[in-house]
Image (cartoon, rainbow, N blue to C red):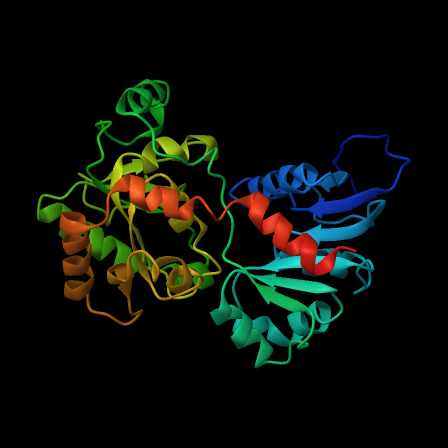
Length: 339
């Protein structure tokens, strides 16, 4: 018998809820998304229940919301390739090697919610049903991610000193990155680790302070020793975003990247490859920060330095990005799919 942790809201477990949310037990990001969407749906007056298990039977709910297609696929595998009626899933990024398997399950879902038009178009061209999907810019929390006073950054940083690889200053002066370092081949290729390391080392050699948030980087021997690496709880990311003047994402394939939006809510100047929702997010406020995925090391480094010197003010970026909240995303999803 498989264990299942279920968090119930509002009424007893015998009563059917409006929405069941499935996010699995990964603590990196998906659990946080599940919790934030639960709060957002609850703010609309909907009752919720939530599962932290990858393998479970359907919870007692009218609608079933999976925070990533991987959770939907695992759920289907555990349940003989069946999914509940009224199932919806967020879709992050296409795995070209897995499209046939994914398509069969995705076309059974009532709704597929993409984070970008790029990913939506790619999957539609590979056989996704034309009537069950929408594209929205991914959500983040303006309450969790916001511009902080320097005194607040200093106080919270003092409580989290053990997480950093070297002494850091609570000032908005860093070029920052946020991603997990994982040796899985698909991650190595998709996340462009090698490019990131070269860019960070080159920036550091030119006197620019660099900071990387995420597990797995502390023991990387290819990084310049002067680069600050932070391994901390997700709840503390806001503190380190507020120490970044520029936030950089260099992935070749992304569903988000979610840290790009989170960092912008904290006032960071965005620099990103044209993947995921980056073009839709950045074009209205700072198109100069966009990079082609095949640009040279020199072009990437020069772009970052240029944006570091003359990007928009932190308050302008934060105010603009604050509109992409979980509450607004939940309203869009509910108005399209929930009856």
